[in-house]
Structures are given as C-alpha cells and as structure tokens.
Length: 222
Length: 378
Image (cartoon, rainbow over all chains, first blue to last red; front, side, top):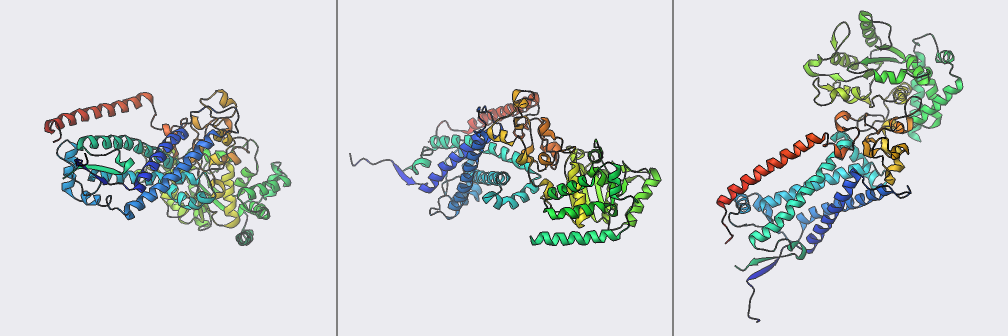
C-alpha cells in the first residue's frame, strides 16, 4: 500500500497571512454591507425606551468594521508588494503579455488551458487590482463621512483632508452617494468572484475554493 | 488669546478709520432705533448675541455696537441677477423691524434694486456713480446666479441692457469684498440645476477674487447681517470653510445640532408624514432629511426672529445651502440611497431593459461559445 503514489502533487500557494486577511476582509465586507444598508434605510422598529441607541450601535459597528477594512486594505497592499512569496507579484508578468491575455480569455470560453506565471491570470489580476482600488475609494469616502461624525482623535486628525476632499467632490451628499454606489461594486464582485472560483476548479480540475482555506493547490504530476 | 488681542486691535483701528468718514444719512442709528421703538437695552443684547454668533469673546460686543453705529459709513452695492429676491425678503420682511433689518437699512446702501426709489436711467447712474465714487472701498453683495451661456445673454438688467455677467464682473473689479448672498449667487442654485440651459454659475466662478459664499435658500437674516457686521468691524473676511462659507455660520452640519438628533441615534423615525412618529417629533431621515450632508446653523439660529426652521416645522432639511443641491439632494422626501428610485414605472423600465439586454447577450455568448467549445476538457 505504501508503494501506491498519488497522481497529484500539492503546492502551497497562499501563505497564512493572505488567507487570514482574506477571511477577515470577507467578514468586514459582509458586516459593512449589512450595517451600511441598514444605515441607508433603518428598518428596525425603535424600542420603547429611547435610551437604547439602535442607530447609534449599528453606526458604531459600521465604523469599527470600517476601520478594520481600512487596516486590511493597507496590510494587503503591503503584503502584495513586500510579502515573502512572490507568487502574487509574478502575475504582473502575465498582465503585460498579450499572449497571456489571449490564453486566459480563450480558456474562459472553454478553449484550451490556463497557463499562468503566478497565482492569478491577467484578467483576474486586473479585477483584483480594480476591487482593491474600489476598496481604497470606499475607505476614503467612509473616512470623509466619519470625520463629520467624530471631531476629536482620529476624526479630528483627518478633518482637514476630509474637508478638502468634500470640496473636491462637490459636497457631503456626493461623497455619501458614491460611498453607497461603491458598495454595489463589492456585491457584484462577490457574486462573480465566488462563481469564478468554483467554476475554474471544476473546469481546470484543480483545488480552487479550498485553497483560500487550506492554502494548498493540487496539480497533476507532470 | 493673542490672536483675539490682535483682532481686537484691528477692529479698533478699523472703527477709528470709519469714524473719520462722512455718514451718508443725517440720522444716527440711535434716532432710527427710537423711531422703531427699539431700546438701548435691546441694542446691547443684540450686540452681545451677534458677538457670540461670530464666535468672538464677549469684550468684542462693544466693537459690534460701535461698528453697527458706524455702518452708515460703509458703502454697500447690492446686485440682483438671476434670482427671486427671496434672500432680500428674508432680511427685510420681518413682522416688526428688528435690529437686523435696521442695520441693513443703516448701512450706506448705494444700490439695491428692490429697495431703491430710482428707476431707469437714474438707477443706472446711481450704480455707476457708486462704483466710481467708492472705488476700492465698497462692499459688493450679489443675489442670484450668473447665466453665462451665449455670453450671458439670458440675463440683461436695466435700460442699457448690460448682461448680468458684465455687471457683476464690472462691479467686482473694484470691490473691497464680495459676498454671494444665497445659494444661487454662491453656487448657481436652482438656475444651475441639470440641464442648466443658461449655464448659470456662482459668482466665484466668473470673478477672479475671493467671494464669501452664504449658502441658503434663503440664508437666515442672521447669517447675512453677521457677515456684513464682520466686514464692517474688521474690514476683512472671516475664516472660511471648504466652500468659502464663514465658519462661524457653516462650521457644523444641520444634523449635528438638530433637536431631533436623539431620535436619530435611538432609531426613532417618521415613516410617513402624519404618522404617530411625526406627531411625536421623531427623526425625519427616512422621509428624506438631508441634514447629515448640509453645513448650516439653522437648528441654532432658526429663521424669522428665531421662531422656527424646517425640521422644527416637521419637514426634513433639503440641503438648500449646499452646492448643486437641487440635483444632489433629490428627492427631497426620500433618503439619498433611494435616489435612483425616482418613479416606480421608470425604475422597472430600466431594470427590464438591463435584464432583457443581459438575456440577449447571454444567449448570444452561449450560442457562439458552444460552436467552438469541446464537449469536455481533455
């Protein structure tokens, strides 16, 4: 029985830090979407006693998870550039290669295999880059709104920058409405992201969804 | 504080300088107050209130009082462009002439289309005379937006048929300071709402000088007179916020000082106008209050002698003192997050178009892909 060898080999593609921050970010995004929609349209009925600050608590949760998202966005950007493994950075080579783009786009149309230098395909890389930019924008607009809620500490510290940005965006109402619309980018992204993760595992017969939990991918031995 | 000391000295010097000038009318403020039944005590209370409103320490109240008495030395030119005169009305139509109204009349008002007796060529001459006579010294107040399309042809004023654009640029050239009174003059207001066929703009966009923007449709009489008083007292502009609005008036959001704020934090909301929540004074956020996005002192200063303001009267703030408020704050009776749901049928039409479009693209893509795809990988 010991002589039987597995036809697949195992490879660590996502380090612990990347996995932990992925799920923390997923948690933050989930809580922020729920509390954010609640703040946009408060639907719970007020308790008898107005000392219970329903809106206040939900806003507090939104702010705390918002700060978490800001922190993760910064850490994740740092890890991308300075992380020990260059498996993410290597994908940039594919982004610059027209051949790689054609290979990936064709593979998504059921033509041929994926062939990547790093862990992501070029379209995937650009999508993740775009969602990171959106995360940055939603963090910034969130902080601008926050500077109007609390005027001491961090809120007071960022107030001058917040005012500058508010003027640039034409007032607080546009800041708030952009914050709202950017949420929808995350919602649409999550649906496509989960679908693509499952689909590519089935289509290309490798470990896909599970690898962001365990960190491992499996390939057929060459 | 050192800065206050310096400001106080500046005020003293300014008042001394004003005292040297000839008063424009023979009647002193004291005489005018007597005629209107306003006592000296009322005047001192008013001075202290204005001092506090401008966020100055109490010793400045004597400066305020002196500046008010000397207001007839400061020439004021008030232009009306594309507007409804609501801002002037806010200031002058009080049930009894109070001190704010009186100060406005006491200021050496050189030109004001609603208030002046002159008409036609005479009026035009008065304006030209004021601009030449007080060159570099007059305070310019503008009410109304500036239409700029077709070189400003959508607004002409007076017998010479000058465009509003021409008049405001001409008057701004030699003004000591410029105040845009109201949202139209400040940011274009309703005239600048989409699709803005006349390309109406705020005054600051057509002149190359700093303009104090007093947003509001209309701004409260306190904010107008307070700004006038600040200029008369110190001969300079007050501290301004990101949209050049005086910080003492526009430093906090309506939401921050709202009397219904506790209701907001507690999650007590009016669901529809006339429900029990509305009767109990619950928060108006869900029926469209834009107080969270609006910087103004309405909750503390209120309107019409501190009588009331929109939220106290039971309707949400519509954000009238913010740039582009007619478009950005729409719909006035819905929260911003529901902005896209303008009309049920139009919304379902848009959703229908997106769904059917996606269906066509999906079927097309599947059909084309299945032509090329192999039945199974490997």
